[in-house]
Amino acid sequence: MSYPVYFKEPVRWLRYQAHNKPHLFFSGFIAFMGPVFLFAGTPLRRKFLYADAEPLPLDGYPVPKGERKALTGYED
Image 1 (spheres, helix red, strand yellow):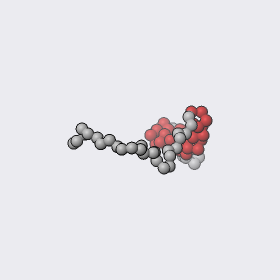
Image 2 (image 1 turned 180 degrees about the vertical axis):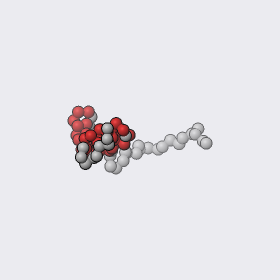
Image 3 (image 1 turned 30 degrees about the horizontal axis):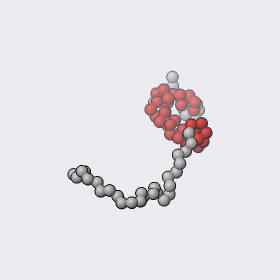
Image 4 (image 1 turned 90 degrees about the vertical axis):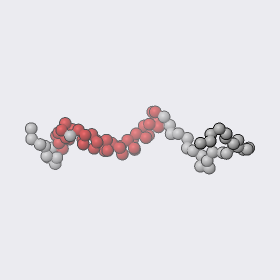
């Protein structure tokens, strides 16, 4: 079997690379699918799996009123 040329036979070249250099082929495939999941995966996740978490309050959480108790027994 001769080495396929990318520009003449791209599908055969991809299959050849998947069999002979799977670490490069699948890392490229995962990198290619990242933007696809970013734009297609997020709406599908919101629709079928779970909704987004509630955003944190912008002004922070309220501080409890009253005097704070001093800690004891934790001297280093």
